[in-house]
Structure formats: C-alpha cells, structure tokens
Amino acid sequence: MLDTIATVASNTEIAPGYKLLTLNFNQAIHARAGQFAMLKAHDAFEPLLRRALAIYQVGGATQLSFLYQVMGRGTQALALLKPGGRVDALIPLGNGWAEFFDNQSAEKNPSSLAPIERAIVVAGGIGSASVLMWCEELRQKNIATQIFFGAASARVAQGCGLADFRALNMPLTLTTDDGSLGERGFVTAPLERFLRDGGNQQAAIYTCGPWVMMKRVAEIAEPFKLPCFASLEAPMGCGFGVCVGCVVAMKDADPKSYGAYKRVCTDGSIFPAERIQWEVAAMTH
Amino acid sequence: MAIQPHDTKVEVEVAGIKFNNPVLGASGTFGYGLEFAELIDLNRLGGFCTKGLSAQPLPGNIPARIVETHGGMLNAIGLQNIGARAFVDEKLPLLRRYDTRIIANVFGYSDEDYLEAIQMLNDGAGIAAYELNISCPNVKEGGIVIGSSPVAAARLTAKAKAIAARPLIVKLSPNVTDVKVLATAIVEAGADALSLINTLVGMSIDVNTRRPRLNYGTGGLSGPAIKPVAVRMVHEVASCVNVPLLGIGGIASTIDALEFIIAGASLVQIGTANYYDPTVTMKVIDGLSQYCASKNTSVKELVKSLVKD
Image (cartoon, rainbow over all chains, first blue to last red; front, side, top):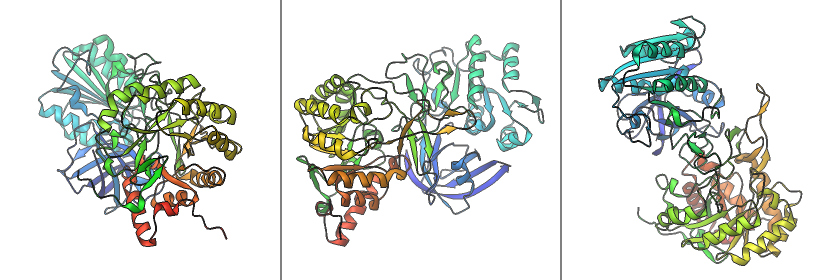
C-alpha cells in the first residue's frame, strides 16, 4: 500500500458519462487483477473523501488505468482532471481475484473442493472495470472462460469497456436492459441458461456489478454448487481499514458478535458469495 | 526506520505523560494504530487514541454507516471493536515496539461496562492513559446518554478515576446546551484532562427513497465543517477548567492545529483528515516545528495564548 501523488496521462470519454483515467506513478505499482485504488484530485478541497476505483488496465509498471462512471460529486471532480493534473492515490488496495483461484483455502473458499477448470465471469454495468484484467489472466492460465456482459443500453455497454472485452477474443454473451445491443434483458438470464445447459462443469463464477445482480448470480450458482466470488462496492471513508464504514454483513457470523460485519476495503473487496448476507445491502444504487 | 531526534519546541506534557509532539490520531479514525504503520512513521507520532474499546467485542451498526457531506462526513459505525481483552492480548504487544503514546478509548453501555473495560485495560502494559468515551452519538445506550448529563458524567468519571491505573481523559460531547457545565462537573469529579469535541449529531436524507442515508437514522458529523464549533468549545472550556485539554474537530492542517492550541488545547487529535490524507499527522508535526522555529516560540508557550485586546 502506497500513498502517493500520480500524474494524469489522459482522461478520455469512452461514451457519454463514462471515462478512462490513465495515471502515471513515480514508482512501480504491483497491482493484481481485482484490486482498487482510492483516488482524489490533489488540488481539490471538495469533495473531501477519495473515491474507490477498480484498477482496469495496466500500461506498464508505472501506468494504470481506471474506467469509471461519472455519477456523484467524487467522480464528477475526477472527470474534470486534465493531462498533467495531479491525483492523490492510495494504491493498491483489496485482495484481488487470484486469492480465490490460487490459494483455495477452506476458509476463503469453503465450497470449492475441486480445482477450477473453467471460469464464468459475470460483469454488470461499470462492474466490468474490476474484471477485465482477471479475464486476461484467466486466458493466460488457459482456463476456458465464458464472459457474461450486461449493461443498461448499447451506450452504457460501450462506456463499460465492451470494446476492450471483445478484443480479448474470449466467448462473450452480451445483454442490454433495453435490447439496443445483444440479448434484451438482464445478464442473469443467459447465465442461468448456460449453467442449465451444462456449462457448470468444474466452473467458478467471478462477478462484479450492481448489488441486485450479484445477489441473483449467487442465487443462480447455489443449486449448481459452484464456487462464486463477488467483488463488492461500498461507500468508503478511508480504503485501508480504519473507518469501518464500508462493511458488509456476513451470513456465517452471529449478528450480535464481532465479525458480523466485514470491511469491504481490507477484508475484501472480493468475498465468497455464499458468505455475504445479500439482504443487507452495502451499496444499493 | 530511523528515529529522528525530537524537536523540543513541540514537546508537551499532559497529566504527567510526555508527548514528543502534540499531534495525536483521534479515536475511531485511527484503528488500533497498526493500520498506519505502512503509511507513516509511528515513532514520530505524538500518540493516538484507539478505536473505542468495550469490555465485550461489539459488531457495530447495520450499514450504510457513512455518508459524505459538504466539508465533512456523517458516520454511524456503532463502535465495532475487538474488545478490551483482545486489544491487550493481540494489539498491544505489537504497539509496544513504537515510541508513541497509546491512549485507550473506553466505551460501555452502563457504568459497570466502562469499569469492566478499564479493569481489563489496567492489565495492559504500554497504555499511557484512558479516554472515556461518554459522547458517542451512534449507540442507543451509554455514550452520549451519560455524556449529556452532568450528574451521570460526573458519577461515571469518579468511579472510573477510582479504579483507573492511568490518567483519565474524558471526551466531551458538543451536543449539549452548555459544554462548560459538563466540563466543570467532570473535572470536579476527578478527570485529569478533557478532550473535545466528539461529533455533532446530524442527518442526511435520500430524496429518492425518502429514507435516511444512514441505516441508524442519524450520525456524527466530523471533518473540516465542524472546526469552528470545536475551536469555540475548546476556548469556552479553557476559560472555566484548569486541566489540560485535547482539541479535536476538523483538524486537517498545521493552521487548524494551531487554532486549537491557541484556544487552549495542549494536545490536538486529527480524525477524519486521516481518511483522505493518511500522512496528515506527519505534515502537521513538521508544520508545528516550522511555525515554532519561525516565531521563536514553543507549543507550550502557545497553549491558551489567545490575544485579548
């Protein structure tokens, strides 16, 4: 974990409301797929708190990119950054996807007894930012991977990096809520069909997207007894474990005991889906 | 990490405890201190106050727990903590490696809870002082209920002082009509020092759902937005009690820290700023040294030095 000031290389619009921020660092950042950073414009007094953004792409040892949706005050401030601008960055943060592939300890991955031979990646909306690097890594590992990519519309799909995912040349099923591109409806529908049609052999599911989508993915995975891992988002005060603001409720803990809530920032951001008490939302938008 | 020589101009002594400088991490924003070991040199830090420790570990509140506001944030964490016993057994041995003053913040739902936690902490070597949290607005019992009543606060202070093996600091709530009445009662009951202020009770509403943004309903407002209120309260309390004060509330820079010191604080605690500027404590320590050098003065001389014409 490093607290540093990065320099903006570029901050370009991918689609209306979606931007790609590329930062240069003055030293090498050893970032793993699924990790994130806390970012804030260095010269901005408002908003106060840094924003948690997933590491989207690595452009060399000292360059990283972040794909983000311009939503509230924090991302609006980031959207104003210009090349040469300075960014306060705490990086890298969170556990990363590989923890749930390489070291499958019973504690971290209780349901996965068999080695993972196939992977299913389910990305919803801007949750795509957390999984692009993981898809690349799965390909390098020669793991047969099926990508499910859901977005609200064709514009949103473009903004969420569809072109980068297509460039991976991996099997990809696309859905949009309005049917403007790919299959009409939610991404969970083709996922369920795929599993029913036999796509579930020795597969692990990796998902990042809206809370309700990940909740549904976990429900779909459960009867197939597939290990399912979800990268969560929550409003964060600090990103390094001290504010205890970004917690998620755990299913396997007594709600009245310490441990009932885990920090998304340092205990996650990726958790086995079966441990998450999905009814208690950490982030609901 | 090499230990740098301490600047004597910023040294402070409070309740018989020597602090290398007056800059502390505030309770609830500094974890158990160890979380910052990767980010700052803990040996340079004046000290820190732990997350509120209770006799039994606490799960904390149902999320959402934080929401950002203009110039600050609301929190309703609900004192999620590992418990006083686990702190003594698991965190203190690691913390003792550092040359910094550790203040254990103590919380309970009743007088008995507070006393039980203090008894547990009395066993822990390396704790410099206790900070009694009678001002947390995010739990329904204890905390602010005790801290809003001069009688209840004085009663608990006297009981705690009787068993505490270390100096007792009592942390005041700003959510009272007259903080001077509370401060006077607590000092008369035996407090060695007072820290102020805890967070101001606030609320934020999501207009789409028409529900509070925080699951708890209300939360504690912190950050730069509350600083003027805190400076005013430190000034008021400094005028009516004769124990050292620890100033807290929106400190994010050297100038902020100096305002509190001039108003009457011997030590300052930095809270919310640690979230968005994790090395802020180091910057303020350096800034105080530079200020003292340039004005040819010391922190000791600056405490309660407000010029009144």
